[in-house]
Image (cartoon, rainbow, N blue to C red):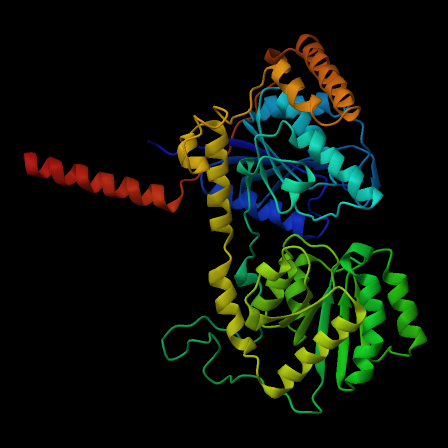
Length: 489
């Protein structure tokens, strides 16, 4: 059976020019899906003067819709006002699958709701981890339960518990990095078995003496959930315990003022360098100035930045939260509890290991390069698309015969069936969710009458690419046909 290609819309509040892991994930995944022959567009909100339609490399089209931003680059939740613009884009681009990103993205949640009303398949990727006790987490989890009650498939971490999802409707797909963009200083690709480390032959592993300065790098948004308070408390103690140590901190956020006050109070201006916000293309240059990467986050689903740090040849000290313990092998990391004392102890352990030469960081890049690949992420995401559209049998997608397990697991678009799913979200919330869905459906019927589909121009597509395996398969088929023709002659 021929491999099917799709028209896909990635929707999120978080995208370039804002730097970050979600933004990079969406861009890299979209680019690799385009390389595999799919059509991908991105829908996000306007950023300053970046409005309307923009084109990025590889033919990736971005729609910057003019919606009001309220907090941390998230748009104001309107529920229904996004629908006319969204419908117009979806019909113009002939979209078949809507893929939303981010639990805190209002644009993503509204797009999934409207896409289901329009009869489109939907996928949601969760990039964050939240608890279950505080008010913000409870509200976010209830919103997720509403949206994901009718989504076709979810790619996530602990969202199964938070949104009460069927585990069969969930896949865990890791992030990845472009390893070539995060090479250590002095790195040269291995060309023989005599140079397995990947470094130039005249470069030996770094040996640090007791008086050599060790630089600890931190690159993060300076928010509470990223552990900035923990970092502020730990830095003076780490520097006091280890005299020949310094910090480089890159990033911006409301907690930056706390770091600046800590530096002034402890007179650490010559040992702590704050760079402020940096562009993603500058991350590698900052990381290669250091020896250790410190990641004090309180919640984290994956932590792409620690993979980037390891790829640059840095030893990683990270808090043992979320999915971080599963990201890198143990010889690349030292873990700490999200507590001040434990973080200080873990940093000290890493500094001692670096000075003793127990960590061979010059080997990290080649190891990371083989562990994480965006091509593999795109391939696994494509399989999710195949599963929700029926391009592959349910037995193959879910791993067993689903006929005896509540029948087909693909979501029905019928309004009655959708309302049944939403009604089970809570005594009062379920009724409110059903009301929203009914209004959304009536609004959709109004738009179909007021702005008929026939009056919307269809955008021409960029030429589709053919993935390497299809090229190889075509070449093999042509050779077989040629051989058969020669045999007949």
